[in-house]
Image (cartoon, rainbow, N blue to C red; front, side, top):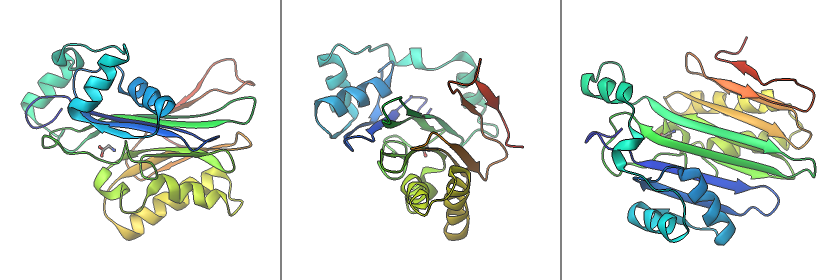
Length: 225
Ligand code: GLY
């Protein structure tokens, strides 16, 4: 929620087969911003902000809702009390590989708690908040957008895969780069074209889950051992 108590969402999706992408930022009253990003990606790659993203959602029959429906009672109380919640990012991301070798990345966020109206972070920016390339891998990031953008965190992790690094090493390299060059906390999840999984973060914790053909149920972590 921003400083006015509104939810402004940013989201993007990228297809590793074609390098197509779609993004929205600062949209309100859209139930699933990632679905809007996907529809844009399929339509033609572009970045729609605020009312133009909301209008695109309406015109394409995607679910819109009352702006207040996107705020839970718990979030509203936290926002009112403002204790320890300012600047906390509210991001969810995913990366996936299908049986044909196609990789995709998606990232969606409500920004950081208490952010100013109209602020847009990294999540909808290809290269910073996400990246997918069938030749290398797919990455989604979370954390302080103001720190993630200047180190192009997702692309930094993907580029490290080109050096034959394991995704865990590539993810750690990206976070080490962020720590060395800028202040701030961030995390990234990474999948390479062989389906190997990696993640790294420099915050206290980061929730991660993954599912593979070999698993009966998802593996879930709140901290990396
Ligand atoms: N990573 C979310 C944001 O900074 O908006």
